Amino acid sequence: MAISGKGRGPLVADRRVSASRPTKATAGGTGNKGGNSKGSGSPRKPAPRRQTRKSHHNPIIGFFLGILSLIWRVIWGVTWRVSVVGGLILGCVIFYFYAKLTPVTDLVDARARGSVTMLDRNDKVFAWRGETFGGMITADTVSPYLHDAVVATEDRRFYRHFGISPRGIA
Image (cartoon, rainbow, N blue to C red; front, top):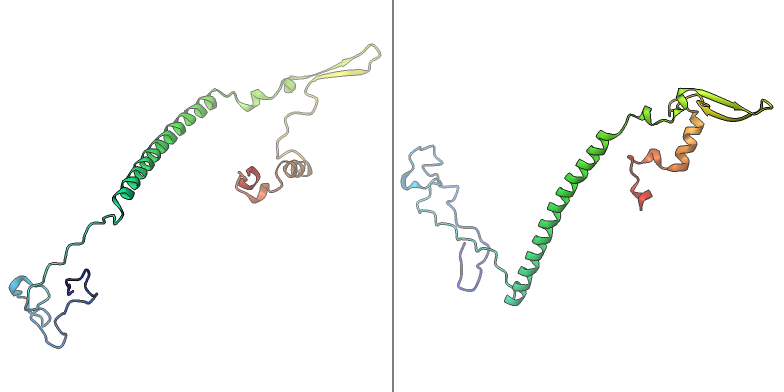
């Protein structure tokens, strides 16, 4: 590339050896005299060094941009470190309480232990204690109509999102 004295030169490729004239390298010769792998008669000039990216700004603007860059790096560094530590602490707290939970079957009230019916002096029932509803009900054993009614009341888009509804939270 030819470089003139005025700033940057034109973007023109260097002159190469023409394809019509065979050289030793292209004609199948293995000898390489002069250390040139292209086979041309003149040694190749080293490529001009690229200049490092320098700010073409005013020094005052560069100073303020440097300060803003430093502030951003400090804020980002503190933020991601605090987030990681907070996530670890939250994970440890969740694991602690998960390990301390009692089984779900023990959390159900004492209705499964037996039923007691209390009668007044006229033999009329005034209270029940114990299993009055026939045991614990799961989503598999309850009526599908009741199941769909509860789901529709709680979250009408339940079957269209992946478990957490961003639209519902917003």
